[in-house]
Length: 348
Image (cartoon, rainbow, N blue to C red):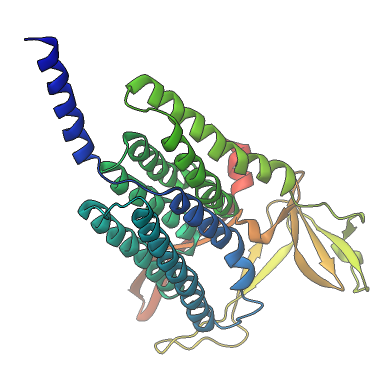
């Protein structure tokens, strides 16, 4: 076989490979969805919350309206910018890319509807993990018809979404991990894909490791340094000496203190007395920060660091409800857990 024939075969092979990898994601797509997704992950909780919308029905409607507006606007803007870029290069939109774009919109709809449904069926602690997995799935689908590096990064993001809850990552941390995957991970993936030849296996693996380091280490650094809860400036006072004052206070609740859990239950099947409560006993010393006599969210268990109630370190979970008949009485056996991730980590 002559050199000329070999060159022809290589050219044909390159054409076939280019045909299989015909999807070309524009730079603006990476930056647009990265910026939009990062801002929504980091800022939605500040817009749609209990303070603004006390009723969970109102929160659910506000969330689906908020996400629907921004994601629809982002999708339309990305579509028109992509069409304009293709026309500027005298290109047409490949069939595979058009189908992948529809699949991407479907994933966005799934994420929005799932986030809305979590207000009614539970699972809100997984909302940021859900959006991480959907991002990874979208990139993986695009990568199947684009550059292999995009495909690998999509798989890496899916694995991040699986590993995060499996390792007990707190809810607040998953929020910043999701924001980092979008705001940092997507633009960085676009930049790498446009500048680096990822046809070889080992260089592609090293690039992926570098991408993971940048995307994962930044939210970890922020959580450990910039986002740590500020400790109160006042010294704790015993619970027995507590009286309401204007300003900041810290109350120490010692081990063995009785704690009453008051139950408020909305049900068409069961009626609960207004004074229904469950008697419990504190097993670890607890410091609570108060402002004008009311808890303001900061707490400390034992000698641990100060934390905020919104960080998701406290877990309250009902694992089982089992109805029984005993001595002619109807009984519901319930099993649940109230725990702290900081305590579990220290014990391990």
